[in-house]
Length: 199
Image 1 (cartoon, rainbow, N blue to C red):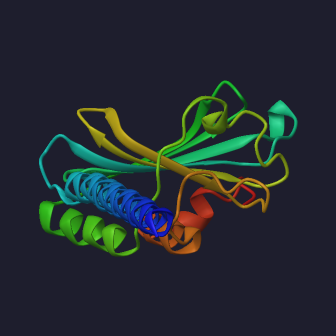
Image 2 (image 1 turned 180 degrees about the vertical axis):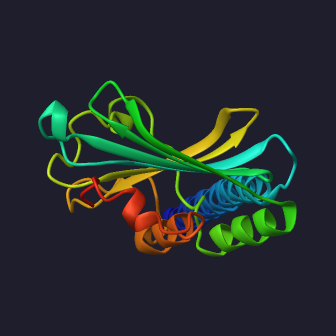
């Protein structure tokens, strides 16, 4: 009889300990998920705020690197948009010699519409890569690599990239074709200006 009671007590104590441990584990998991989710959403929110800012020192930029070919045939182009200026620069060779530059005026309402369109296209959705994962040398050798930056006073606040190659997705989570179209549309007759560039 006493053995039976002892066994019941031990079983009850073990059950209580297991339940307490299970509850503690569930609380820890819930806290981790809540705080990591809040942290991610805070980072996205900060990036989105930086993207849609129309302060005079702000800019957004798309840089497109073409396929890795002979120096004479290698091309890169860059579209930078600020509240005051829209610039297209086409580079030739791996030393980035400027082969063409177009600068056009801009205004705050136009810039505001543009950056809000980029925000709706999720331009800053993605987590910046670090170290070797962010090394773009030799990436997508037969295709194109696209960098998207938010700038403040000429310095990058956040940079995400992707490519046209299936094995090099990079850090950008947005749809590339939409972002490329939005940037290219900032420069009238952009197709003839980048005719040397094979996308």
